[in-house]
View (tube, rainbow over the protein chains, first blue to last red):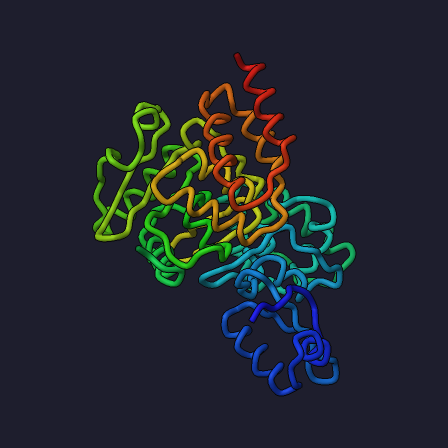
Length: 155
Length: 213
């Protein structure tokens, strides 16, 4: 059965493919297992099913972390998948490396959630962007209520 | 042969054996697997920023039992003579084709990636993948046994391929790789049997070839 790409509600999907509601649910469930469908909504919100022509894994990288914590949301420039532990500190470094104004604005909200300053500055040192991280932190402190950085990292 | 899941597990394992964090770009079958165009590949093609990062990666895979193999019978004569040829490492069915800085003289623009996969173990291995247009062009350049089949796979799945950008990239690199336009045209001629490619794209290649002469 060929299913067209796009966004559907369950009713639209059933109608488009001449299926009963239950058959449509079954088919979408099958497609979901093949990673060809992503679902948004649920609960009070109506579910919207997005069908892709290629298997799509759920991203779990920089943009997911930023969009979780920052009130300024970002449209991903690239798909970012992480195998391993990706922390807020990693995300700050990636944000500074991407470097455009909008990304920096969104990234500064992450300082509120830093738990391991040592990790942050080790990563910054490795990428040689310590100065930029401190500048962004100072900017964040001016506008957002965030934790105080240990003095030794600013010197 | 290696499948998507095994490939991810392998990269995760390699990340644990690295001595430094490194970044590279996946091309060929590996990139196709990351983007979902296929589920298995014979070889894992990676392009590193420089020889130093490639050496770090090689050190890690040698610890895992991969050994260097000859390039003979895999690449044709003109590619074997190229000074930017890859290093080949294999272990059983799995094979790494490791390029440094460029692919047979075709420099990779690392900032133009569309997907990033981070493998965070004891160290970090960051693998980026390029757009489908780049994948097609690089497949046309490497031109190994299964490369044409892979290109066919991509064009069958993707309806909106920007041929202009592929040709422009090839024209830009024609000084470094003299055969690039010829190989691309040959591939496009073969593809014409399965998809429609506008005549103006071929004309653009012929005009560039004329100019080169």
